[in-house]
Length: 368
Ligand SMILES: *Cc1c(COP(=O)(O)O)cnc(C)c1O
Image (cartoon, rainbow, N blue to C red):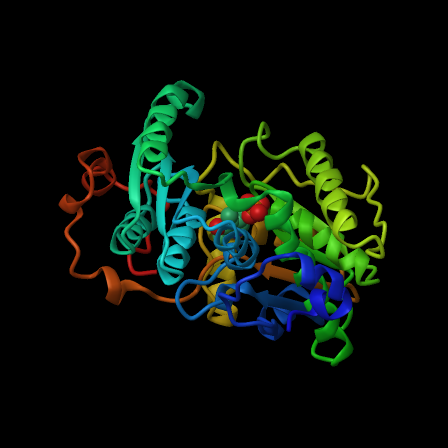
């Protein structure tokens, strides 16, 4: 049973949950990188291994979101993201596993090898993929027509917002806070002072912040912004915080009334670069450094930027006795065997540009 439900049985009774992943995810001591950087207590929590099918941070959210979709009798799930969205892919993988179908509304983004891989894997999973070039607002009429068609067929989809970062999705990371506390009490890792984690649609960093506090840990979360500030900012963070707390408390009044002050949320803005999914020199250098010292490979859109913030923190502050945990949110399961034989011409022609145009110059790892 997941640690959150063990602690709060009322939540277990009230929240439909479907297990998709393999938990707890491992924690690793980054001994070599720590030695290089002059810090003894440097660790990584590997949510890249959250599932054998497709890992990463979306699995924890989808256990709650798809649990709810099943409970509501949905047959199809509609979600949103950019073209290479890990969230849209995870949704495609796990809806198929549960016998549901997924529909993804995808927006244009900078090209990268992972965009190609994710599109092909989503396609293999039977996802219905739609591509739009501009802001989602311009396509609302098109989306309404799509939904009207579904209504006529009697298949109104369960809707999951971008990144799965609704209050219910964030509960997956509230649980992750309790999971980490178990690993601390088992002696697998000392209680972290600081956790570095990417900040996209915010459900991950937010849920984790609530979970750690509710579990009684003193750990500080440092979210590293990797999306445009209009999606990831303090105001939105606290709005989602209020809603997530309200959800938890409405289901179980004994859930701790956690508080987070605005000062505490030290969002890092300096590692974002030019735009979402545009890799940075600093991010790629951090990826190479981790790979050379520990053999773990991150990616340029999310985790590389968060690792760059961690490295910068170590360079500036020394931090010899600080216990620092890097939370890896990116899938590390190789799925190249599944997509090897797939011809991109099977995708709608609007996606062909990602296969025909060059990837961005800093993207050098086709096989990852
Ligand atoms: C989606 C994603 C994130 C961001 O998580 P949010 O909950 O959207 O903030 C971080 N890392 C990876 C690899 C992701 O796919």
